[in-house]
Amino acid sequence: MTINMRAWEEFLTQQEKELGKETVDKWLRPLKVVRFDACNLYLEASDSFKSIWFEEHLRHRVQTRLTNNNHKQIKVHISVASENSESRTDKRRKKSSGGSLAQPIFKLDFDDFDPEARFDTYIPSQNNLLAYKLLSESCGLDFNPIYLFGRSGTGKTHLMMATANQLKEDGRKVLYVRADTFTEHVVGAIRCGEMQAFRKAYRNADTLIIDDIEIFSRKGATQEELFHTFNALHVENKQIILSASCPPQDLKFIEPRLVSRFEWGIVIPLQMPEKEQMKDILIQRSEKADFPLDGSVIQFLLDTFGGNTKALIRSFEALILRTHLNRGLGKPPTLPLSLKTVNNYLSDLIQEEEKAVLTPGKIIRTVAEYFGIRMDDILSKSQARECALPRQIAMHLCRHELNLPFMKIGDIFARDHSTVMASVKQVQKGLESKNHEIAGSIRGLLKLLEGHR
Figure 1: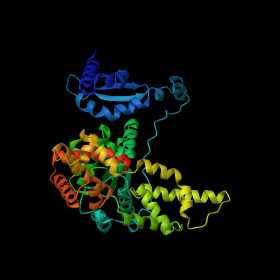
Figure 2 (figure 1 turned 90 degrees about the vertical axis):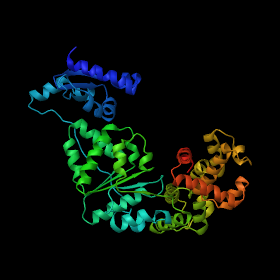
Figure 3 (figure 1 turned 45 degrees about the horizontal axis):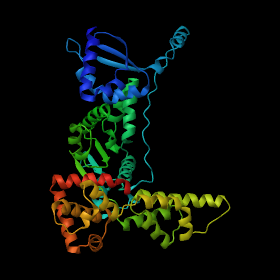
Figure 4 (figure 1 turned 60 degrees about the vertical axis):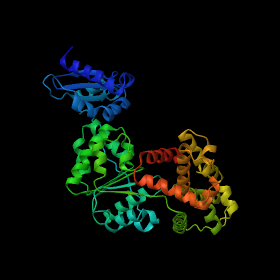
């Protein structure tokens, strides 16, 4: 066995210890060794999935751990069998006819940002004023990076696109990409041997905006390139704006060196808009679409879909579309629509929302299951810690996730409203002091409840 092949086998054996034998047997051992020399190893994957998996999960490992007997890095080149099989006959034909061999096409298609997403169309709630003012007044240029986090529907993407639009109008070169697009660019550049083109495109931007960076979880090659892109831009004082569903310290399977850089500038949480802002958003959209809504219909939409901005906007857009479709069928409805007509047009969405809506009962049941106790234990008079802490956390979630009044929560838990206030305050204090038990429980429960909001 040659030195290079022995090094490859030793590398695979080491990966079995770190990744598991099943993973190595599925993704790595099927790679065919085509040829090798003193400093290069050429592999062939049976399909593009194995090639992409290698780039995402193994590329950063081979770059640091695969060396020859002179301790020099062995460069690994990987190709896909289907791409190589432009059969040798075709290749010979091209060569004999004087034609050049086709190369993989590398193209960077960046995500468009909605021109209607502007600061003057964003309606901030009191909780989101900091992010709004920071970005709208100075586009955040006093902090680098800016890291926004919040669950779906809190307005992260609108604010980032509004910033992109504003900076573009000011003559700055702005790149806005979703995290999955950035990943596709990295993988494509690696496969086509176009990393220089990739780096030139990203590092020449005045501002880089990346949405939903939690998608980078477990993507080693992408994280490696993001790290160097971040450093290159930051050193040149070029603005970086990022968004995620959670704060940096809660990101899973993201390299610590990246997490620390995300915290260099300012980290800003975004909260779901309150009912009044939801109403303003709906009225604004109604006026822009020239689609008037009756007061009773507005209230109905808020009551039914107002738990999440995306659900509310989706219902309104569906209402417009279905109204136009009925006009095309010769059934022109009169505007504004009646409550009965709205109910009829949105019946399927209403049913979906009723199944997914978060309620106090679902919160109590989820908390009970999380702590391994019964719902009756939470609602009981017991002051034992195994019941009291879950009860306090359930009250806190009813207050902060459902915006229920203290009196209403007191009715649900058969407690005086002052007891509820004290319980909510105690949990909040634990969160602010980063109490491990309370903070960890809240994070875990919010993930479990995510599908109901």
